[in-house]
Image (cartoon, rainbow, N blue to C red; front, side, top):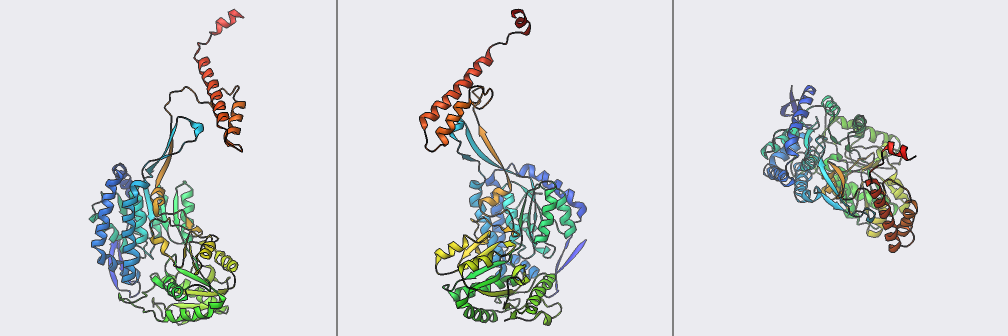
Length: 529
């Protein structure tokens, strides 16, 4: 079926594609498994040659990529370039540099009680990885997990969001340009029905980025077959501003962190807590900065449009409930005044909020920023942790010691001091959430290793017939007890340890000699008796 795609803000037709029928899912998996046989056997460095070619193709086609992303999502071209194209190029470069180390077999220590043995950890590809990506960052949040999975030797089936499908077509073309073998990456285009069929077809691993609700459904289905998953879900990220912070910097950061991509960022600043002595000044500056933002479709604008029309209903619900309960809309427009079909929402700063409001508890995912005061450090920590989410947080203070102290008590997968969001852009850091922020992590070495089966191996020469801890146990209790006291007791007693081990070794060798004697036939025993 031909699928016509329209610009989210203007309704203009921007392209079309062929939808993948759910009936073709088995064919996709069959082709992926066939490709896996050869791809998984390639040395890591040969796989990285393909990823390098992909990175170069991305840089060469940068303008086209930005155009497709902007048309598909409504985000500003500069934002598409910086947060999507640059992020993916940096992530692939990181994989090129780190994969040989991250994925190589690693020798590890072996306890002295296993004298004569060696140990190592081996990383092996899982098989076919299913990547389900979202609409808010359709290029970055598709390409990076795909690249990590491919570096590990897996083949991948990618289902991009049906909200921004042309980015999936673009990714498919980039991989073809880079010369990847047939079947190594396949892109399946469709909606929820296709996604359900892909999950139920039992991939070897699932990487999902999206809503908490959908993530729980995927996790429940995966659990039926114990399919491992990484789930990158929602956020309600707090920003804590202490009175000694650089207020000008904090205000500029808050405006960008809350309103970039029209607030449709899982790590957006969704609630701000400001220490009371500077609260009024901070809010005044915040409103002034928000009013200065330019909104439109041009590269020099600051804010684009919303991407998903349905999301406007959630934004309107949170704002209206807060206003009905006594909150104040400092900037922006009341939802009752929004024009039908208008996707350009002005930044909304909301004050006089309370912690129990949906606007402070539920993910809004729009250009909305509630602000409330706090008095003490302890109160700020308690308010920040009072959430079912735990994706990211930021702390603003001139006292770095206090910043680190507060961060260490925040229940969050990511945190920044005097900056925000940037942990996801550092490929050396693992990225993942806690609580309903998600399960597992990717990026860094762990990102590539997550897509691999880790096999722990111990090796023995096989020279001796039995180990000291094998049967028979006769006479071994006391030497083992002395060994435990000598090695794990209050102080290390090496002579005692060695004496105990030699006793155990002697008992095992005696058992070997006795076992090597020929057994007397049963009828001879009877004659002797």
